[in-house]
Structure formats: C-alpha cells, structure tokens
Length: 105
Image 1: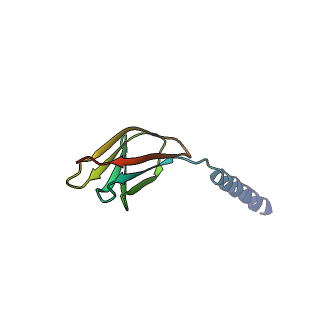
Image 2 (image 1 turned 120 degrees about the vertical axis):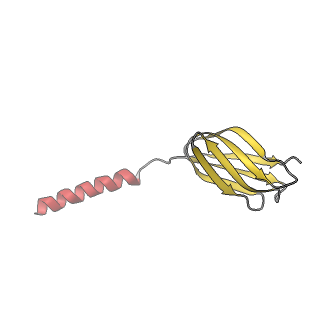
C-alpha cells in the first residue's frame, strides 16, 4: 500500500512539473488609434483565428495571440474610415506594438 501511494505521488509530481515548466505560447499585439475617440473596437484575424479587443482611450491590446501572421482591422466610427494593417507578425513570448494608427476621414 505504501508503494502505491509513493508511485501515485511520483506520477502527480511529474505531471505537475510538466505543466509548471510549459513554455510561453503566443504573444501580444497592441496599438493606439488617433483620434482616440475615432474607433470602438479592433479585430485581429489569422486564418480561422479571430480576436476582438475594445478600444479605450484610443488604445487596444490582444493579450493572448497565437504565434503567426495577422491582419488587424480597426473598426472606425463615422466620419472616419476603417484601418487595416496586414502582415502583423506575432512570435511566442513577444509583444508586437503597431504604434499609432491614424484614421482617415
């Protein structure tokens, strides 16, 4: 019986260790919209993966984006036009900053 408990504890320790040291998966995308009140949300699309983020004070962020290449779309309010940024690269464990995105009228 004691051996079974020790074996169970050993298996649990190995399983916990495997999850504890899991690498960082995905990265982030952020940007700032000018004018700050010109848009309400942004989308990041990569294949069938679609992320949505609210824009607050002109800023947005997609915190858990899988590694890959995205198209980011800023959904502008009238009289501004939507902005589209293509070929946005996301790498595991890294932040991708799009900087200032100026909305055209």
